Image 1 (spheres, rainbow, N blue to C red):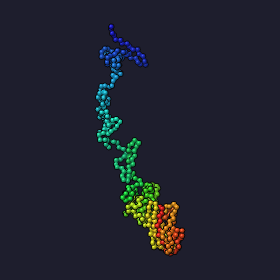
Image 2 (image 1 turned 90 degrees about the horizontal axis):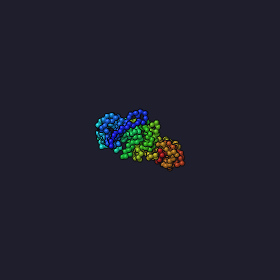
Image 3 (image 1 turned 60 degrees about the horizontal axis):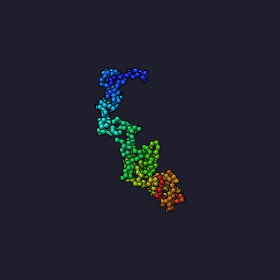
Image 4 (image 1 turned 90 degrees about the vertical axis):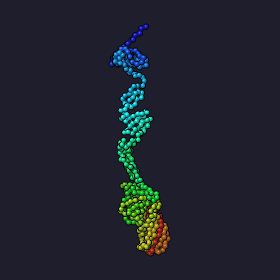
Length: 385
């Protein structure tokens, strides 16, 4: 039986513009036709299912497959890739610009420091990244922080450091356990007022009312080492004003203050414990004995005074080195009393709130003194400060 080839044009149907003729030209075992004469637009389907289209008429013409071979890419790679499919590598030109790949690990070369990216992990290789390979930030190179300062760091919400400054540790100092003193030399204490014995004041920048509260022991140097007790401290307009007393033993001079320190211990090294003070006794026409001493233990002031002499007054008294801070005032019983040469037994002492004036009477009933003869009161009391 005879065989023959049939080429039947396919009628054009579809959108306007589909005007090129095409025909099914049969099939091949594999690949495009290798012989025969064909027209542009002829197509065949080989036995692997691949479609081939004649794009240039001829014998056998030029054929292309719009569907490919149906398998993975093969042949030489191009563009940013080098080598052959299915396992091309990065082209040398790309790797030379800072990228590389080996054993499925992408390497990013940043100025001779390699960053490897593998399995979601970033690792810096080749000795790490040096300062010269990083952009500068807002922070100046240097060391920040010491025994009296801390580093204050400014950071953006992206974690970038834009500034670092050293900030003085506020209201604190270095504690010296062996001596019991807390070093305040980071703070500048400046003389403000006072001369001679009694009270004086100095100022310090910032709020130091907690650190330098009533009863705190003070040590400082003005040519020689001096000791005081804080009577009170107040803060205003950015400055703390501290009122101190060293009795008649120590005087705050109008001079520079150095080696300043404070302590809350009962007996820090060198602290005198007891201070002498001028009683400023009143009501005596002449005084033969005038002794005043005080010591401070927290918010309690221990007072001892011995005042003897003659008087023609009916009221006698002294001035406390630190005012009484008992809101109910102060009434104290005790002491050895002599009135007009006669021992009268325990006396009574009275003072008001925030007052340093202490009046003394000759008995516990508050009886006034006689206005003549020898007078004496030797008293030991505790006063709230």
